[in-house]
Length: 155
Image (cartoon, rainbow, N blue to C red; front, top):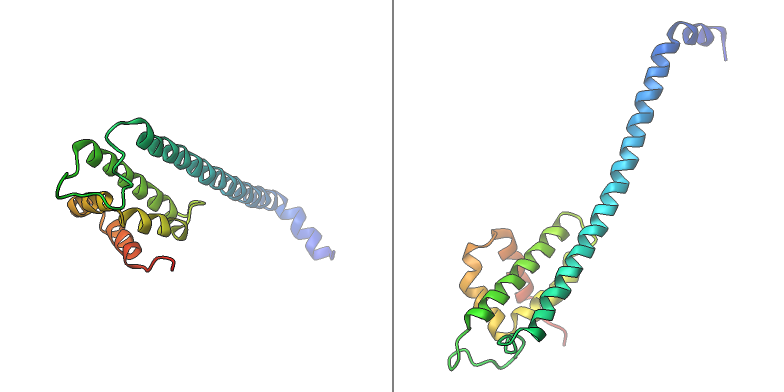
């Protein structure tokens, strides 16, 4: 180190120390935010998974929901019941929460959701409730669901 550099450090040591402190603080804050974001994403996914399990358990524990997964449900002979509609609206809200997490950069991805959405909304009851209630939902979410429904399924 030259004499000029030593002289500059001698005259500006306090500003140099402050700068090092500020830069170090910013680096530490960045690392903390990154770790916090990862933890929040994992927590969000665990919470969604827990809600998913609780929601699907209702199909097996609540009487009157057995038709939800029936691929040949007769909606003309027996229209959607209040219990079925309420449950299916909860499922749609659950899908929307997953979609929001995925679009916000969660560990859940839209690709992971697409096949589930397509398969679910091919069923008569979910399809009927979706058609009856989609107008009141978020426009971007509607486009996501509709794009999933239009994609060809596995052959």
